[in-house]
Length: 346
Image (cartoon, helix red, strand yellow):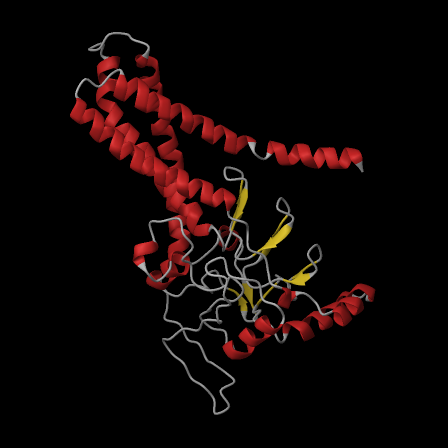
């Protein structure tokens, strides 16, 4: 047990190496920009002050969003998706996969679960011992099931999913802008040092290297940011982009797409004033999602989640109802079924 515990501790410590690397680079860039460029190289006070103000604004937003993405705990499924004790005992005693599936189907009948495995079976996590909500996956690094899991990112040493996907995108966006600000303001003095219009002082190395590093980071971050913005527009996760979610009527990569505007609102929220800040404003509860072709019963699904001890939302700690599209709603006389028909993807 002792060696195993030591190995696990070492692994967790090593997981922080990429985060340490990023912070060391940012710390050096701060010194190179503020001290070597603004204090020792720029002669004009007005130019120096304006550079420092813009630099610190984008640095603050970058650090804020980055550490929010690191510190936000991945959201896991509520207790409503765990098997009741009687069914759990039957499931564990049963050896035939077909009978186990029958047990899972009985439990899943009262849950807002509409995706299946590639073979059409109920998605069940043997590690966490629960039925997986739609778009939920098990992260072996975090050792838990994560709601609307996108991927596990080593640069934030955290799982990116429903609770922090907005923070992750803002981190990429502000990191890109941070690099743009550095390149745009440093290039004039980069050229002067390169063409020997300025004397070879100790600031030369820092300024030349600062420009190269910022340009390289900008290119790499921009490509990743562009990809995730494309995913947001399609309402897909990285996992779904590589492996289409399977519904009862078959796989569909665009099964959760509601049109560009509503797809963006899924991640950033319905109020644009919160979009640029790393505060939680994503829609929904992470457990259930509107689809383009599935008939759902929002009242029953929400009551099941609440009475079984639904977890709190990262946004405000309150249970959110299962959302339905308002494009086309048809209720039966008993008010039990809602037919959802979404517009085609633009």
